[in-house]
Length: 377
Ligand SMILES: NC(=O)c1ccc[n+]([C@@H]2O[C@H](COP(=O)([O-])OP(=O)(O)OC[C@H]3O[C@@H](n4cnc5c(N)ncnc54)[C@H](OP(=O)(O)O)[C@@H]3O)[C@@H](O)[C@H]2O)c1
Image 1 (cartoon, rainbow, N blue to C red):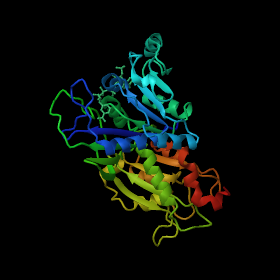
Image 2 (cartoon, rainbow, N blue to C red):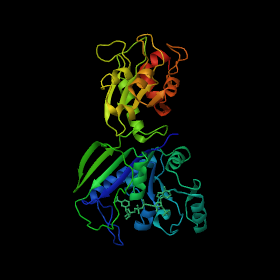
Image 3 (tube, rainbow, N blue to C red):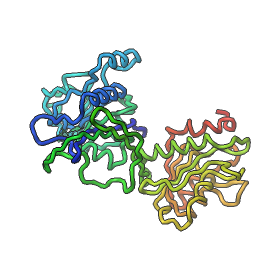
Image 4 (cartoon, protein in one colour):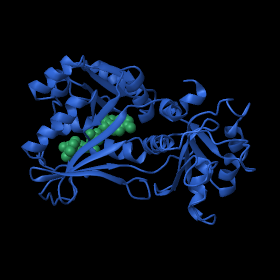
């Protein structure tokens, strides 16, 4: 099920704290960065904070610039983004500023929490997600019911930690502020948890006044059938590679990327790459990795089109090459049509060989575009 694009936003001190332990909220950003945050808020459909942040900071979470609000209205969006919070207990102060400023509000909570929230008379749409509050269900609800396509998450640490460790964050916008907190009891941005093993991708650094903004993208593939945000990023790259294929009237244009479990890219390839007029994308990518590479066993192959089950040009189809390489997870955007091979079912070959195949139809249109002269679409 589709999720919104999830952008985590936070500021930390040089010693890695989100706040101090005093009663007032610690201001980590300067005026220029608060204005940047205002701009990001104005660009999203919804802003989410955890119940802990409402209790600690009593935030309003508004778009402060009248010009930005006017631009939202002019483009047919509500003046303010939807404000979202999450609470297991439902125990929130009905007088908190969160409920009484800005536009619409929604509280996601458990069945028990919903009873409490309704008894308190919170001025919000209260959505009970079952006995526990599950982040995937919450994101699906925001996407499908509330129409949220971009979600900004402004903390606190417990919320950020869960979204990152569950592979649900598309991007982290981290601001480093030039001051120290120096109190071990102060809240940290990320708590203990199982994080991705390898390195995140640094996509931007920018000085904003006296703070530095760093933007990162998580890179680790998911495990099994559950897609992570990074799965979407890698599949989007495979679709980009498909667009680079030399055109053909007799074969699809496909891109492929092989990624280790820790998020390290092992190889990439595309159809008819280099001097080989019949090479397939997965074949081109796998040929660049040593067959004894131990990372293949935990790797994911991203292929813009389902790996082939049969082919005329070479004896071994890509589904078999993938299994023979030891890879047991494949993420793809669309199933092979009958254009060249009737009843091709690479996914069944992979599944029979013990691999998990994940299809992400959100990417289908981009994956098909370079082959539209073959499919008639
Ligand atoms: N520097 C920054 O950029 C920044 C930004 C935001 C916040 N902060 C700071 O962060 C601190 C607050 O962080 P925090 O970690 O204590 O709180 P938090 O992450 O804002 O909220 C935690 C609360 O959210 C609810 N929650 C979280 N995950 C849940 C789940 N899976 N299911 C149900 N409910 C869930 C729970 O509420 P219930 O307890 O009601 O069940 C939990 O206690 C404050 O000091 C604040 O100043 C700093």
